[in-house]
Image (cartoon, rainbow, N blue to C red; front, side):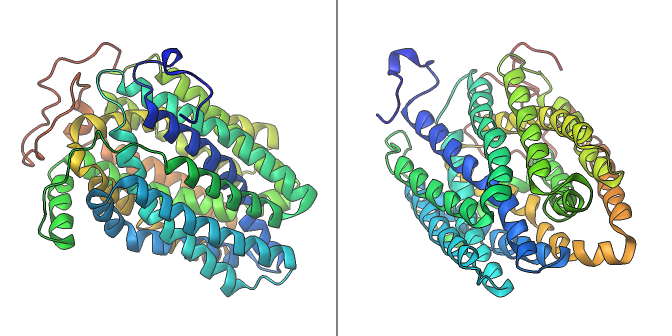
Length: 434
């Protein structure tokens, strides 16, 4: 078993698959958070502007959105670990080519967009398979704690990855950070190849890919809390993504001192998520989605801080608080999916979740530059902050978001009718506040 800890020293819920999934997520998180900064500064270093940064970011996100639903259906049909490994290999190859072009000083905008798009295709197949695999790797009332520990490990690597990436860009240039990300994907693929699929029951023969997609849609659309929050994050992720990927590096370049301070601010966001995950290993809010949604409001703070812009120290504090509160939502969301969605449909439902949450991101990435030209960077950032607040307040109007309660045992049946209030309210909740 590829871990330094014996099974007797691990908690009962931390089985072999959970350990492998956590280790591989840490590796890829270390690489990807540095690469996120590196790709933006690679575009700027090649003579691009804010609009070009947005185009490269959109080029990755557009194929991610287009292929997500197919990726979810494939992951519920094929062994999920094989889908994950194949996606990691594609990400490794595309990122290595990106790094080679940047290191050679020959990267052109269309090449960076093409390689980013290949990375997005890999992520489209990886994401639903990985989420389904993780959600099926734990069971029982300790699931929330398991997800919190997983996210704490993953987000802890963000702390080092973002800070190290910013420092490496300043010292060595963005190309080496992209190369390190390619190596991280290779290591993660090797780890994920050892995942055990014996606990997954054989899939019943289905009616084809379209039938699987329709089945996943019925599961998704029959739960108001699910599609309500996905719509919320469709808008929130779009505007926050534009602020982080496009406006953040520009503000850092013009007012904060460059890549290293921006990397430090992102690392403080990672530190906040670690603190939030640590909190959720102890705290089990009863109305988990209500509490989680309240904790999304601070997601507006970083855009507001960049709009001012505040000093680096204040920005770091804002990012830390935001990371903590958003992580409370993240653990609550994973717990809700785990307890409410049948195992054999996890990847398809995750695909609809990802699709809805990312659907608007390509457009906002591409339009971020023009919006800065038309409205001004400060005004665009204030608009991002306002939209986060509005959509988060709106989703609290959905009764199931306010009332869905924690279960002790996950469900195994199909989605309830739209008029059925969830069923989680009928179960005995597990401790905690909410």
